[in-house]
Image (cartoon, rainbow, N blue to C red; front, side, top):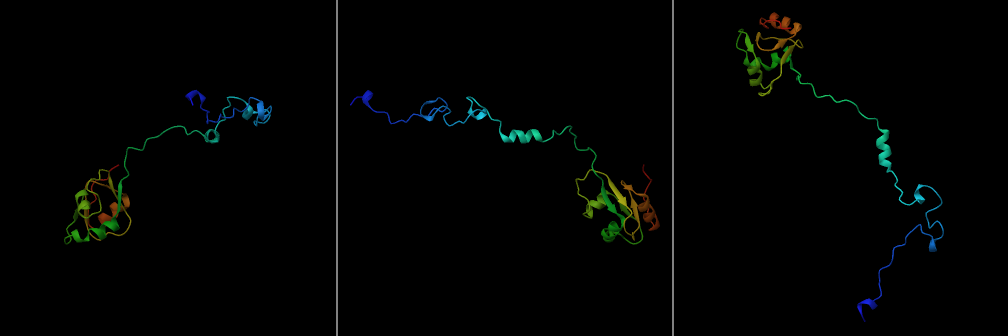
Length: 149
């Protein structure tokens, strides 16, 4: 037996759409996009994407950080152990960090609000104070510094 005498065991693929044994339409049906040669159907995902409205515009996050806010009543409770007699306690960032109320690397503003009652006198430096908190601090015998705009 020679190489050219071997019978091929490879079965030929049926070429659809060229008449022959399958009939005139060859299993493709009559007319329409699916019956044409070289057809390209758009995927359903594409239609879904086109239905979604385009989002326009882009905004970066604001550069200014939100201030750390403390109520005077909460400070009064947290700083009771730092107070010594009737002398005013100097309230600044270092004291807030030492009391564990503010992170050491916090770089934003600190603001005091008037929530709660204050019992210890405070001398506030380096932070913003609301009008109500200023009144409560001064009533307790402390000093809230100069009002800032």
